[in-house]
Length: 205
Image (cartoon, rainbow, N blue to C red; front, side, top):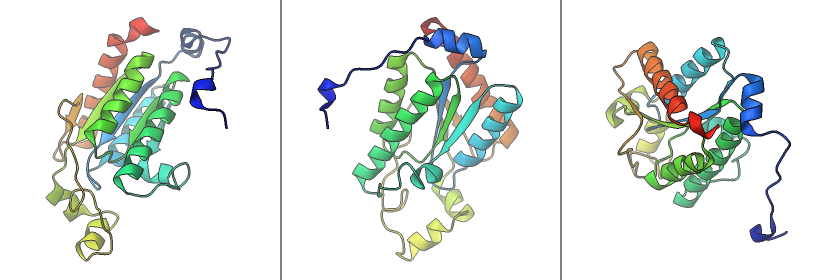
């Protein structure tokens, strides 16, 4: 295998501006972070539905879905979690560069990994919107849609985020969504932030 230093990025015949202009769309990544059961996937699915209904291509990169395929080889150690976030960020960037809105919904517990995902997009001139689904741990545990909190409480699951594994809340997310906010209003807030991000970075395209 050739070392990374020997790799050369292949440049195609289309620029990003050509691609986006011809397709009539703009790529971006929306990154949903929060505890298990916070509502990340539900909100991401609603945003995806609204975007596609409006004629804007979007695709949801859900944490469990990604771990069922691309990242099936990763565990839940700190290193495995960081690699999971790194890979999803790289895939989201490719989707966004192609003109889709990538909707990454995963716990992504560490601030460092989320900062790296943002920097990756900013360096590429692609809008990145971080959405913190700030549902309290007590509410997530009460909802427990996958039964994870119940299993973790009796020791069937170890290193569970929020219980015996840390979650580092975002310090300056683009959007904060509380659990009392109706889904339609939360979706509106995310889409408004996406629109602002598009305008702020349009000079890159």
